[in-house]
Length: 159
Image 1 (cartoon, rainbow, N blue to C red):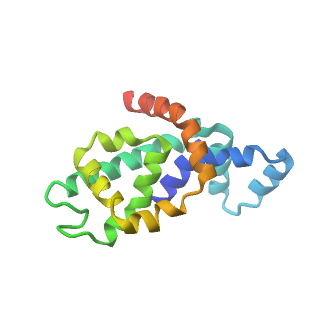
Image 2 (cartoon, rainbow, N blue to C red; image 1 turned 60 degrees about the vertical axis):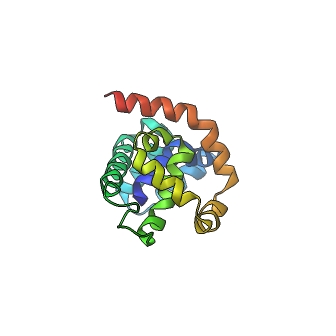
């Protein structure tokens, strides 16, 4: 999930910090990425945003995760069983990021997942260990870009 999160986050928001750089500085930074495949993915995310070839597969990965959660939550209230575990906690930042980026409709379309996330979000540990660490600058970019994200998501889901 971490690579998918990085892809959608970069294509939607993080790209803007790179686009503000001097073009020569940006090219030098990209050239310093030792893995050619990662360098190409990063360049595409920055230059193409949500039109990057990696964006749609990352979105599909999140859809699969939410479908897997929905199945797991069919028989019990938490991801790994009847009790809250580190599995629930480990995935909470990813789901929180989906909300921030404008993918909330994917969560809402799965009532068991939405209920699980609401219960998880209400826990003090989630507030202290996840919410408190979000970068306000990025949250502002996520909010600004949310309408574009929702339009792109609708386009991807209609295919």
